Length: 356
Ligand code: IPM
Ligand code: MN
Image (cartoon, rainbow, N blue to C red; front, side):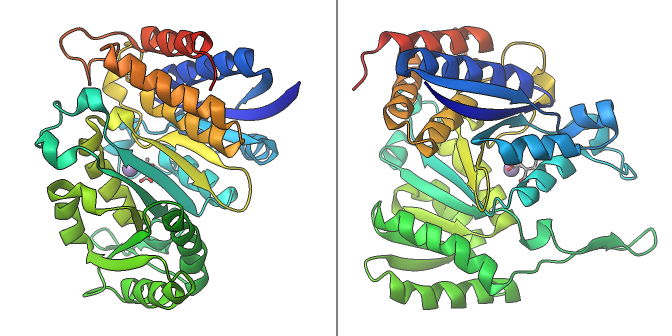
């Protein structure tokens, strides 16, 4: 039996609840496909601060480095958000694990779900068929530049990018475009920012190596509007760290809920899979959070582990649950199901379906 070592980082808020559903799904895949998943749990975020004083303990990093893949729930706790003097913050754990694993590319696929088309605040005909993927740079830019305070009333965050940091993610994005619809859109603010002008120059130069790919360039403010106005124009969207963070939350409107969007972070070492949403503290412990974004992150993990049929099963099972209206309150207000019920339903569906 093949064994895959999965390091699981439940994190904070709804993290433990949604990750538990994703593990049920992996268990179902294990039974159906005869793969063995060995789970190791690690601490991160507020949970890690409470237990150890550190948002990312060293043994969590080791466990992630040794894993075939990492599954992460969510990180963040409001008790830190309104304390400007907090010395350690949960989010530092997330940023540090991205850096430690060299996860320079965060891949966020944006698609519609037939069952949710009517639910978005945008006309269904604008959305139907929208299918693009955001390549968000994840270990550079303003998130990681020098930051600090000068006295009480001045603070700064530097945005820095080097050519090599742009090239490595841009190569992945160009390649993805060649496997999709051969279109790449660079989102930047090149009319104002020097870093954006470097991104544009590098991407322009690289485009010569990918002659089949049509490249276009959008300022981020315009892109924010286009994502809602005409999402079908996009195929691969390439952008820096903070623009990618903002545009991807916005793009979740296309899918129908922030609770639907998965992501994969890849780089030089182990890959990490996590939903794009946060720790949703208001819902923690209530068994109401949508586990689908995490379950779809598991599908991305299965693709990464080259268990392609299993990945397809997971996606089909999620679609089936949505078609049946078997979903949490964010996507089914009229008759919501619990987090655990949705996890059980999807896991059972995977076991039931005959593999392709
Ligand atoms: C995300 C999150 C994180 C980010 C936060 C929690 C640090 O919003 O993964 O999109 O900004 O990258
Ligand atoms: Mn975000």
